[in-house]
Length: 178
Image 1 (cartoon, rainbow, N blue to C red):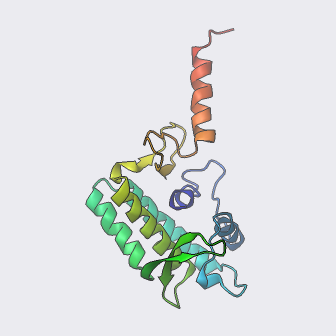
Image 2 (cartoon, rainbow, N blue to C red):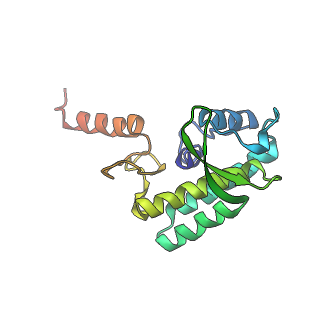
Image 3 (cartoon, rainbow, N blue to C red):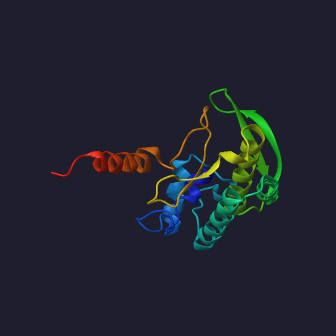
């Protein structure tokens, strides 16, 4: 979810800003199955929520671009503390164990997202290492991603899009001119 948020930026997508309004933010949250306390009881994201999430997006990119592992850990810890109280493990409605990070009662949408992103990035730092925070290898893309693949060899933020474009370009370059 963290890299999906970062990659909604117009600096990444040729389609422009992918979070241009509060409705787009609501769709993003729904697509990631995020049910934030700040949006309970039928509340929808406001323009202020969107502005705060766009600022959070810049903070998350800064973590992914951090050159020192200690700096990335410090920044992610700061996000995790923005409105978090403590993580816990609870059963969902299907009886599966799920992580739950409680947030303070007055946490904003951006603060709740910051906690989720911060905890997730800290988990990656601990289990996989800082070198899993990467820039997309496509020369036509400015995207970023966290490589959570088992082998750690992922090269593209969106393999089906960026990887495919590179492969098609390489194939065309190898073909003799007609």
